[in-house]
Length: 78
Image (cartoon, rainbow, N blue to C red):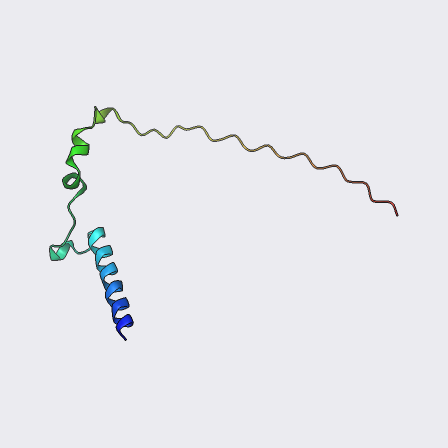
């Protein structure tokens, strides 16, 4: 019985943490700090972030060559 209670408590704690981390509990005033509030030093260390451009002009990879058909092996003679 104690093990079941422990399992239920751990499952509820896990579900609560999941909802808190996603920000679903923000309506109750329980929300994690935003990304800007958590790591401001990373934003301050960026060098010219406005130069960053996301481009989608990558060339598709060449198709893999098809293997040549194997020659038929001669049938063993009895």
